[in-house]
Figure 1 (cartoon, rainbow, N blue to C red):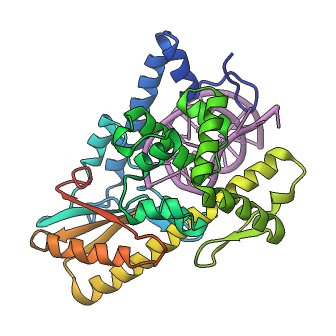
Figure 2 (figure 1 turned 180 degrees about the vertical axis):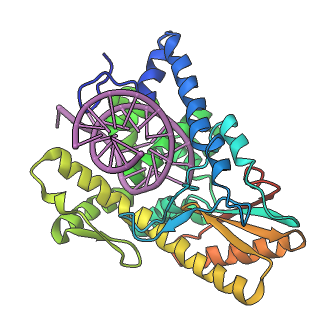
Figure 3 (figure 1 turned 135 degrees about the horizontal axis):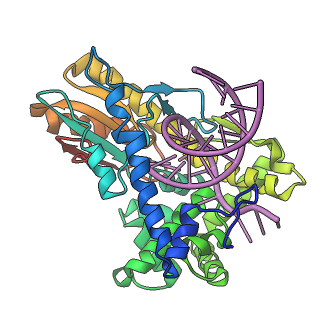
Length: 332
DNA sequence: GGTTCAAGCGCG
DNA sequence: AAAGCGCGCTTGAACC
């Protein structure tokens, strides 16, 4: 058996079935396909139409400001922060989200905001330079880790570097990276070693964050939001290591949450004072979704970009990607 | 009829 | 022995 659930039953988790499918078994792929469409149908296609408010003709979520440990919002009843986008079938669901007559949907996303915050918090010169120069950060990481010119980075190398970058934000181990990339643990370890050689400031930041958490029992965002990690000194390795990963992730995820909240306050004030035809309709962690009058799209985009970019002043620039369309999917 | 739990999976 | 952070929803089983 490849893997067990925490209670000891054989796991049928996606990653396990993917591995079995890769070994040439036919059934796991069928199960994965079935579960994929089943999830989309039960959670979205069948459910969302029943939740349309009869007075407004829209679905309305509830946002919660005091739920998450890191300072993010959460969304429920229905959750509009997990509308599908990664698969083609999922994107068809996203096309059902449309603006009012005479309006367009605008999606404004922070680009790599957590990695930029890592550059700021760590002060790592190489990472700061990459963002200052507007480089493709995953390609730049690949060039460093694999020792090749950026122009020679292969798609596989970039994918590996992207996994490393995300893994760092989450406190992932070489073992986890190996599993993610389907490579040997030793090879993954050599990637991590080379990453920390090339970005020593990031390595120091990770060590420093763990030490601060141990000493004071909490970590902070740039704005001083605290996340307490009482198990950071636990003698139970599993609990302590979980606390260490949380301590590393929280300053980045939490600072990103603080930044977009400030942007939302600025956007709201501007809409109220100067742009009554614009509506801020959703927030999805690093993205704001707005309804904008057709003829104001260009002007509004640049104002929104300004509020989001100016919502923090870090040691690296913030960048915002803005898309506009007839549906939420088209706005990406 | 309802609640709780585990497993699984949608998103950032 | 575990091994990647943060959420919410659906299903099915167990239970009251």
